[in-house]
Length: 441
Image 1 (cartoon, rainbow, N blue to C red):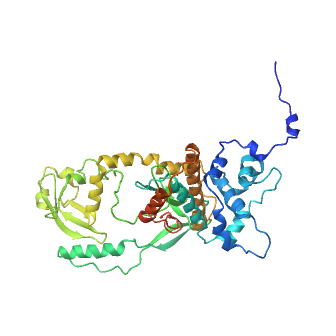
Image 2: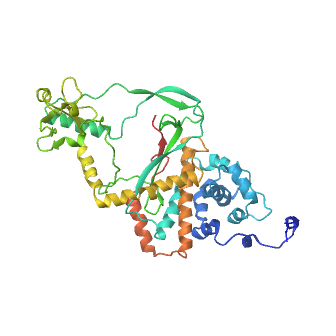
Image 3: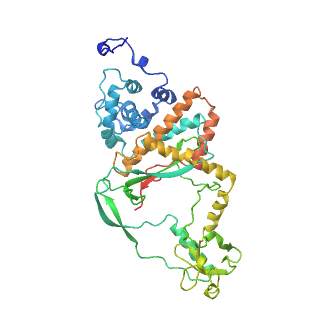
C-alpha cells in the first residue's frame, strides 16, 4: 500500500535533550573528547577586564569554537557559519547552546579580533597546544618531515591593480655568498669583485584590493593574486609549523629534468675533476677554469682550437667561436651529495610518501576546509586564518585517532621526549613572519 508522509511531525512537541539527538560518533563529540578548550581562558585573560565593564562574549564558545566549526567543516564564511549553527543540532551541542538560545551576530569574531587579538600570538599558541596534545598521545613522529608550499588565491580581483617599482630584496645568504665567491676568485688568481652600490629595481603588479598579496603566474592561463603557504608535516599528516635550523638532517629532494636543448649533450655527460678543478668533455678534452661570476658560478671554457675539428661539436655547442662553457656553483658539492642520496633506497622510499603526506595536507586544506582562496585580506589576517585551519586539521586528526584507539593514553615520558625533540630540531616560529609570505612577482 502506498504510504504518504504526513507533516504532523513538524508540530509534534517532544521532551528530549540536545545530547540525545547528536550521534555518538559525530566529529564534534570526538573533538570534545580529544581536548579541553579551557586552556584558552588563560591565553585571553589579560585581554579582558576582571572587575568592570559589560559582561563579555564568552571567548571559548564564540571566538574560538565557532571559528573551529567554520574551518573544520569547510564553511565559506562566518555569516554562513552562523546560519548553519542556528539549525544544526550538533553544532549547538558543541557550543553548549540550547534549542532556543540566540546565536551571536556574525561580526562578533571580526570585531573582537581587531579590538583584542590583532597582533597577538593567540592563534600560534592554540596551534601549539593542539600539537602538544597530539605529541602527548604519541601520534606525532618527528623523525621524518615533509616540507612543501602551495599557493592560495587571494580575495582580490586580478584585473584591479597598479604597477609600481620596488627594490629587489637581497637574498638571505647574499653576504656569505659574496665572501666565498671573492675568496674563490683570489684562490684562482682573480681580483675580488667590488660590492654592488646600485640598487636593483623591478616592476611589479600590486593589487588594489589586497596590497599584501603577490602576483602568481603558474602558466599562461592561470595568473592571479595569491599567497604562498609553507608547511611541514610528519608521516602521519600532522602539520608542524617549523623551519629547520640544525645540521645532520638528511635531505630528500626531487629529480629535476635537465633544460638542455634537444640533441645536445647534457651536463652530466661532462665529468668534473675535483683534483684538477676542470671538466672533461665526451671527446676527452679539458675545459679549464675561466672566472667566478657575481652569482657564485665558476665558468669553465674549452679550447676553440680543439673544438673546431671535434666530431662531437654539433652535439656539444652551437657557439660561433667554437667555445663550450660550463658553469658550476661554488656550493655545488652540496647539490652533488643531494643527488647521490636521491638514488638510495631510503630516499626513494621517503620521497614516494610525499604525495601521501604533505600533498594530501594541502589537498585537504583546499578541498575539505574551505581554503582554496582566502576570505580575508592582508598578510596578518590571512596568516591567522591559515593558522586556525591548520590547527583544525590537526585537531580533527587527533580526535579521530583518539576515538579509534580508545583515547590512546601514552605515558608522560614519551610526550616530553617527542615534543622537546620537535622544539629542538624544528623550533616553532610565528607563521606570520616565517611560514607565510607574499608570492614573489
